[in-house]
Image 1 (spheres, helix red, strand yellow):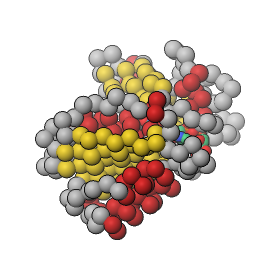
Image 2 (cartoon, protein in one colour):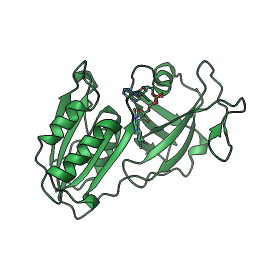
Image 3 (cartoon, protein in one colour):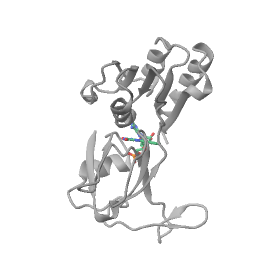
Length: 228
Ligand SMILES: Cc1cc2nc3c(=O)[nH]c(=O)nc-3n(C[C@H](O)[C@H](O)[C@H](O)COP(=O)(O)OP(=O)(O)OC[C@H]3O[C@@H](n4cnc5c(N)ncnc54)[C@H](O)[C@@H]3O)c2cc1C
């Protein structure tokens, strides 16, 4: 995980009213360092040369309005344009931000939460732990590919955090599916899960069919798709 601190006068007025929101980053095309802003052709954003721009979605992890600094935490992985950019980025490199997109509304009356995800969900889970009422209980399960990827999450007095390890030859999300299936989630618990989209199909099914949770209590978000 690499934290990119983005700054510039254009961030004046930026706000993230809800945790687990999103921003879209426009990055320079591979092999260039210039940022070319694409145009909307009525169907999609395209660069003047007809190519597709590199636009990826991240969690606005922290925004400091006093110094206009927006942090995004970017997971490093094989073969990703944003991952490669984050690894090579130098102070002063240009990037464009759009957003924020809607986040998650924490029910202030809820007393029980369950949060789960992979590395890409850690920034959002960190924000949720910061904002969920201290009197609530919060079960958290996070799948990581490498024990070194475990971050110190914000302290929450009611949180129980379980880390699960992805098998080296396993599909992403498999360990998370198993861990969620063996968790105890009482009806009425507010559930938020994000990560690899394929694995979330099984998780969603389990939450509704096995745990009998209500649709209004469950938020499941595909953050990326294996192989795409
Ligand atoms: C609302 C929202 C919030 C998000 N917040 C964050 C965040 O805070 N931090 C973060 O890192 N990501 C976050 N993501 C996920 C991120 O947008 C994707 O992981 C994105 O695909 C990364 O772009 P990339 O250019 O590195 O890889 P891509 O070019 O999109 O993908 C290239 C290849 O890498 C694979 N891939 C993509 N992501 C991963 C991964 N994490 N691990 C392993 N393989 C991967 C793809 O399947 C594909 O085969 C969020 C997504 C959403 C929708």
